Image (cartoon, rainbow, N blue to C red; front, side, top):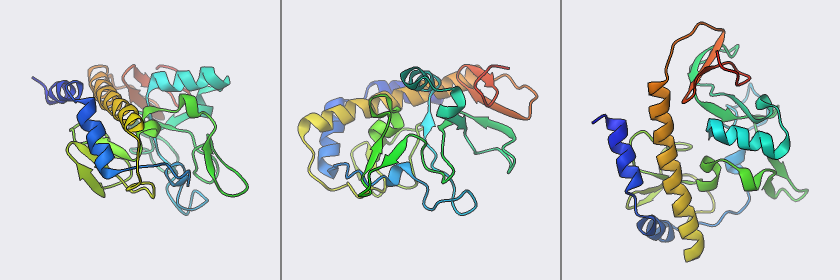
Length: 216
């Protein structure tokens, strides 16, 4: 069996209750600081922009929710592209503004952060700062700073805070869903990979696409 298929089986077998136990052990409460939605500093020349993976169907859901154009929602994942944004890359990232912040991030006058598409936000956002220790799944924003069982926690000021069992189970269910979806997407990218010539080519589970999301 291919390793991605083996990891997908492991993801499908994850026990939500055990994941919730681990999340409770680590602890978490979102403080709405916005750190996970923003670049470290404003300006493309000063820091890498915020990068959050978004699946093709999540892009379409966000488009439908706000009547957005494709490029209002997503951009080619920057890894593999040159300084002019040309080359080949895999998957999509949420669009960013001129400061490199997520385009859907907003701040109140007091600096409290908010997601303007909160109900339709991608799984990577729903589950941050957690990941599961499975090959083929993403580990957001660097190395883990805490872990319990299969769950890894990444840099976030909300870690270590009390979380209700209900919230832990909701988060655990989303974390399992994300792990399954990431592996399904990886398998789809592999199986539908069809090299084409173009200035910028994005390969996702649906095949090669242009930066505006249209297929080659």
